Amino acid sequence: MIETVLVPLDGSTLAEQALIVADKLAQRTQARIVLVRAPYMEPAYATAESAYGLIYPEQAVGRASAEA
Image 1: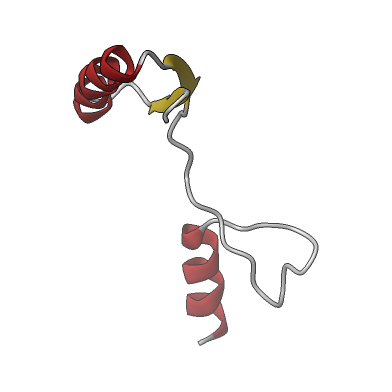
Image 2: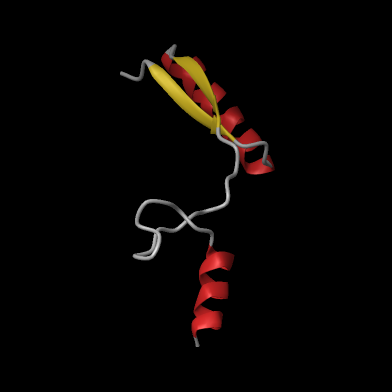
């Protein structure tokens, strides 16, 4: 039995469509809906050089180009 439907929302059209499906599922199963705001974030990558921090891909490319 489904008790809770978790719906991550990021403001996209696809997320809004998922909300419609989640609502139908919740109604059929008498579950509650929990909405979670999931904003888009730039991915960050760890490298050996930045063992204690994160760098963005552009920074990694810039460093690799400078070292070449």
